Image (cartoon, rainbow, N blue to C red):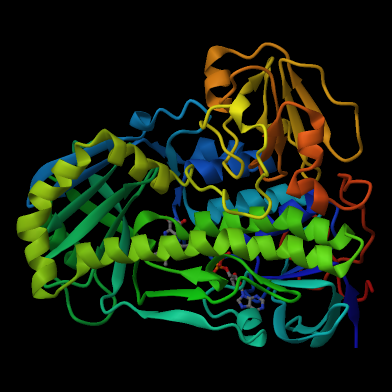
Length: 543
Ligand SMILES: Cc1cc2nc3c(=O)[nH]c(=O)nc-3n(C[C@H](O)[C@H](O)[C@H](O)COP(=O)(O)OP(=O)(O)OC[C@H]3O[C@@H](n4cnc5c(N)ncnc54)[C@H](O)[C@@H]3O)c2cc1C
């Protein structure tokens, strides 16, 4: 049987798997990326990309094309009972530390294509029509059996296996990890249509009333209409354009005409989360780890961020001298991402149940409570900002993580930025900080003081004169040092290099420090079923 050797087997080349592959390529880790689909789907499930994910795509070099092809959306307008009750503009959150403060609405297939292009630029691509059949985990690695659709089975010898293989994950089943949760009682339906109305095409609009809801997600050309099964729709089967027309007539208080649907679909949704995101040499990311209602447009975003969190940790685990350290590093993946997934499930679940519930209390809540409660809560600026930080995912932090702190020099700083927080974007001379962060090593940002001696253990970036805005964003009272993780979160801050050297992150950094190196050039033969350009990740017969 043919054999492939790679450090990591990534199962599933959707947004989560493709992001992980890009991150591993940047870290110089060898991987084999497979997907059982013959080719990418032309239909787009996800279309909302939130600011935190835009930052990641930017660091991968996958954003420029998407910005040109997507629609920037900077406001949410909620109508209840035919009246506009709440309007929230993203600019209200005052994201001084973010270069992309609006959401981008762009089709998932374009996001996947941008990630494919990024992978190709690194010299790799996914193997489509390759399926994971099963795998065994041993003390030193994982042995998997895959099938390539034509030549039959081949074996993959790897150190870690990552399930990015969606809701029905074969990796999750193989590792015997429970997927706790249940199905929603009501189905979710969508239609991508041409829309004629006189409303702002840069705002997401939602219309809620006793009998149900409808949301309008404006893309560059089409508009996606989203609703749940309600009293204006057949109880079963695929919805038709006239189902949506009836809903528009009933729910929307503006003149609106829809036509030319390119996709109408109905989804039976679940809300579930894996009990463990990592078990031994198995990790799960994206829909394989958590699924929920797509109402807030969070699923793909969360999967991309899982992969971003995991990529550098796998690189460290592979380079660490002993298995105990590798275990500690990878355990932080579960510790940091599981709570994010769980909170997401709770919030999307509540939102979906509120807008789509058919029970008597749910209908009464929509009819009598929501019309005054939503504007009342929405009038509290603190709550508006909190909701925006949740929605955009900029507020996600890892403060309780073992990798955050300790923080013995805290009296030299304000509480604006704490260990575990996402680093705000700041300018360093003519450039931005984020693109300069090392993809594998920690980066030390030195502000207003002498830089620590150069070290292979970290990259150093120097900022002599910080503006008042930058000082405020960083929480600086005087000079300071910031130890930044490869994924752009703050690990520790201090006023002497010794404080950073004593940080938990540096204890786990591989001996001599991990070094970032370019992806290795490969000379593999072309795979039989190559669908795109670029070199394969690691191909059958390349053991
Ligand atoms: C209608 C709808 C709208 C949505 N809108 C949004 C939105 O606006 N924003 C947002 O963030 N999210 C949204 N989502 C959710 C989003 O689509 C998913 O969260 C996202 O696709 C998950 O990406 P993934 O890579 O984890 O999994 P997937 O995209 O499901 O990819 C998994 C891949 O694994 C492959 N695979 C499966 N089993 C195997 C195997 N045994 N061997 C090899 N390959 C395998 C599959 O072929 C597939 O390509 C929406 C979802 C739906 C249904």
